[in-house]
Length: 128
Image (cartoon, rainbow, N blue to C red; front, side, top):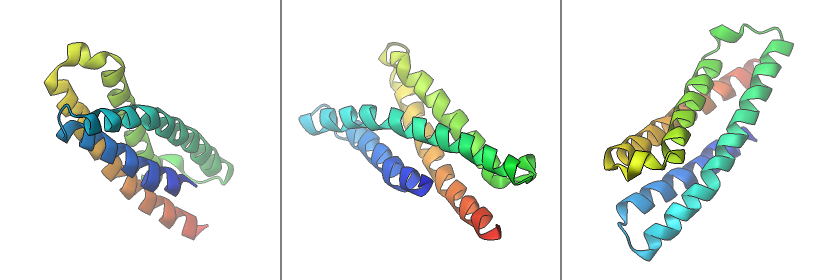
């Protein structure tokens, strides 16, 4: 289920965000930005819920939590997305172009880490 969140929602959020950024100020950009603002918070919510469930799963299976690369990539991703959410919720501190750029690249890095995170999760699941 988390793979759907990562690959479908994550890719859509990134695509909509970058499309809105690269299209400029035309109507398509406005629609993409609106879609990005709609889906990104849901994706963050589902990732945080999945993170909680994943940590509980490892604990209940008596697995070493801090030794899991899946745990660490998930933790880093949620931290990056929380920073990104804070940047956007502040209105990019007065709509500053640099913060919009930081937001875009931070989100892209987070999505790349999510793909790595999915690979670690698959590896972890196959060990069980």
